[in-house]
Length: 162
Figure: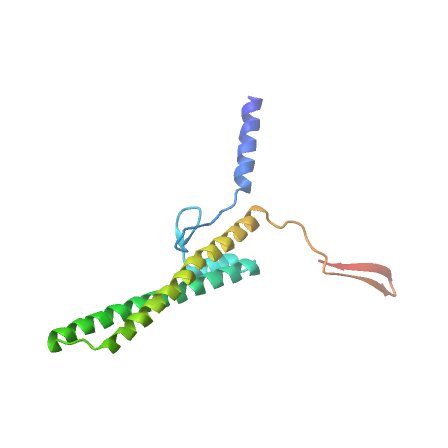
């Protein structure tokens, strides 16, 4: 009976210290321990106490947005130019060689977006790992902000502010 009681107390003590960890998928989505997707604002609220993690997360989300704009802009440029070129070829029968410039611009946008899109998930994963480390190792104790020596007509003493 003593062994069962001891085992039960140990299990409950471990459950009491468990923290809610967050995870990150490759597409930059952040999930809590219940596998619910967290919005960007919720993640920023979790990261507000850790400046380094918040900066990494913000850089990662900026890279994701910029990469999406460049990628979809480049794809749109190529597709729209191709549709217009096909339409003009059906109507007129000849193709102007200067119509290839949008293909080059669109391809350049797509090629520029690839390295940007590849780097954003690493930043977000690093921010998530930093906040998980903070959750696993909570800062306990206190810090002393200031100490001073005080004297008045009643006597002398030390003042500690924490």
